[in-house]
Amino acid sequence: MSVINNILPSYLDSASMAEKKVFFQTLLHLSGVDGHSDDAEIEFITEAAQSQGIENLDELRGYDDEATVLKNVQIIKNRHLAMELIREMCTLSHVDNVLSDEETLFIGKVGITLGIEMEKIEQISNWIIDRIIWLEQARIIFEES
Image (cartoon, rainbow, N blue to C red):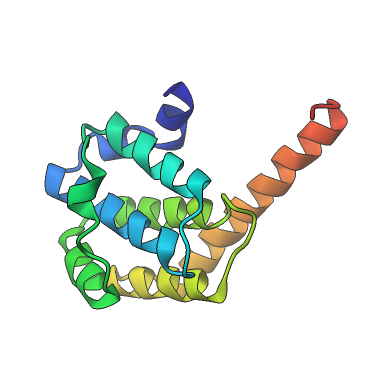
């Protein structure tokens, strides 16, 4: 659980429970937008949601259609929380090492719905990719498997 706390820092602590639920509903939708949910993606979402007091992900799964998710996400008014959602979406989309066109498109739609500029979404995405590369380089340098 300590890894998840590092992934999801205190920015979610000040979010309302409704915002947290929408946050994780959006991540759940993203995990399946390419036609399949990877076990690693679901594990990531489950652990993160539980760390925020959401024990039953099944109640969040009833929002499978994109239009409903995009409507619900509008509850997030805090720009910082909105950008953190985009960051977590970018992170989640790379968990299975495959960034699909469907994932990219959905992240863009969520960002636009939240008023995040495409340039900012691209900056966040590039930062996540740079972080992944940096961590992989560290594994090579320190001869970790």
